[in-house]
Length: 365
Image (cartoon, rainbow, N blue to C red):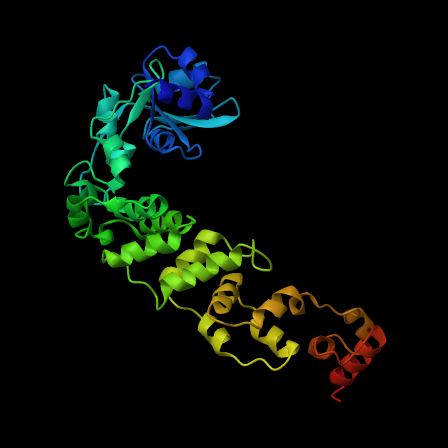
């Protein structure tokens, strides 16, 4: 497959240095192979060596990080971070538990522990035109199918069911019938809340996340909040530009929009706002996530709040009130709050008028 070798050289030129440094067989595996065959932009690079991963990393300049339990190291080559692992086998002591990892002898044993056939392919760096595909992943890619490697896959690691939604949404793939049958029996309750949330956040970070959550709901694995898919779509749209861009982490916002649980955002969405000062009072103390979700629920007044009203500031401060004879204490705050309300609502112009309103409020006028 000369085309595969050429595509690999274009997508991952840094791997030539790895090939030159390797004393034992090294393979590109997983998502990088899948995306190379799909002609998609480069994925994270995972390498498997039939030998000592740390020794190979040392020849490449040393690992930047090492995970001893899983036998993996990270190393930077040509400006790209690579994950290198020794070939491994794994077993699951009980459903949903983290795997027990032991050294394997071949790349085939390493591929056999993976989630889906499309992620269980490898390319030997010494023969970059050769595709190692023991489970028919290439054919499944061409058919647009997600297929697990064995019947206990979702029992061993239920997070694979969430990953199935991520891949199906991202690539527009369907579940192979037996895989769907097995997936619908998945019990996400056998994994810790942290692992479950982490996998859901990875799904929420995808551009196609709303579709992914819709799939999980269709498979009976999650319960969406009311109109959760539509909310997730609106949140993604809002985060794509001002004034919401960068206000909240996308994965956190999309996950909350899709699954909830509902918070105080409904209260904000249902509120009737008669003036800028009322808007500021309502939004005060709310998190960015609450504000974003309320906007997605229809609180249009949050647009001018974010662009204008939240940025309004007084030209006077507490020192001006102290100098005018207001004693230290709560009266200072009452005066400044009154002046800010008046400024927000266009009732004062300039520091002198601000001070007059503040003094009147502080003195009980």
